[in-house]
Image 1 (cartoon, rainbow, N blue to C red):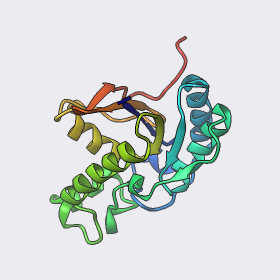
Image 2 (cartoon, rainbow, N blue to C red; image 1 turned 60 degrees about the horizontal axis):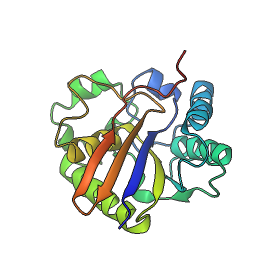
Image 3 (cartoon, one colour; image 1 turned 90 degrees about the horizontal axis):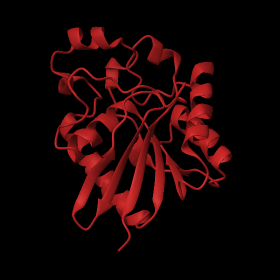
Image 4 (cartoon, one colour; image 1 turned 135 degrees about the vertical axis):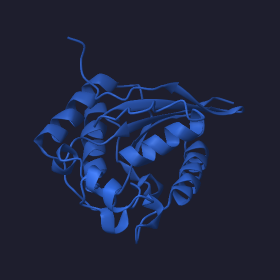
Length: 195
């Protein structure tokens, strides 16, 4: 059996990212920096590195994926609803500090996907990717909160490290084998060329 490789690429920057606002399932578009980050990510990923690309249905991820897919000649982007960002309910649009202050228990926000629900969805996503892309290299364009959860689960809480933020257009790579999932590489910083 050939192992399955999954690259988790976070979408490029939006204006709400600049303000540290919770986006959740609110469909916020990439800004110019985000569009440029997607182009740089595509140039760094290189042709031939990936067999397929899949994306969250939200435009900030989908547009990032389209830029990468075009540059790497990966064909059409498949949409996977399990790649959707965590829903933050009525807290969407709040700055991160406002959210923490207003909702000390983030699981009690009306309309919010609880951490337990997010965990179950993350495992379903991994099962789906392992089944649908068995033995292939798939790039999955998604969102910060979901990537953080996936990293925590697969690394058994080694990643992300305490206080570490995931930059827009950052890439972490997982591998699935008969032994299960493991983190092949973890990079919380935005992809950029070495200077």
